[in-house]
Image (cartoon, rainbow, N blue to C red):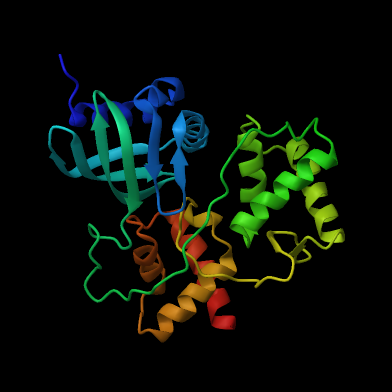
Length: 281
């Protein structure tokens, strides 16, 4: 029996939730292309790296909001939950034979199915460029010569970036899971050496890393980050711009801008802190 595009879409979601990267990559042709707004992923080797990093975040799919299908295409709108946040996503899967040849994925720019909530303020944000993961050595055993160049790659791609996010990106790419103190120490040491060499900058707390000589704050789309992976000063500057544009409920306005749906207790606490920072600027 022929596999339909809708069946491929349903199977893909099940395999993502199961974390079965081998079976997931098996749904694609050798020359398949996945297009996202932050990057384009080409070929099975790159797809394997992409999905390995993606399933590590344990995404869960909620309601399928809309779906349309032809003999070689399925388009969809779906709710995705990751790190306790609900995000509305959309995409299209193009099928050749019974496997995926092309796929396009994106996130709605605002809550409410892609249309702004009534009275919501919308701003144009700088796109977020994510680091493309690749195989890297275990930071607990690799020397500084191996760790430094990779960490510099991450900072140049995503900076200003929270140090914890940069270290976790490196750790996931190495096959690690938890960012323990043993794994953090050599990564933190590499960051200090990069600053000594004049390659990156960070404040005394070493919480946010950025390429040397670049702006301390860039207001960007959420991209692949969770809300608590956005530097607080970036959220604070977004709030200042939203306030100047007429927004009143700043925490809710931030979620709308990022395309996030649910105001969790964790999000509320983080946004309250950012709002305090925004009042200081």
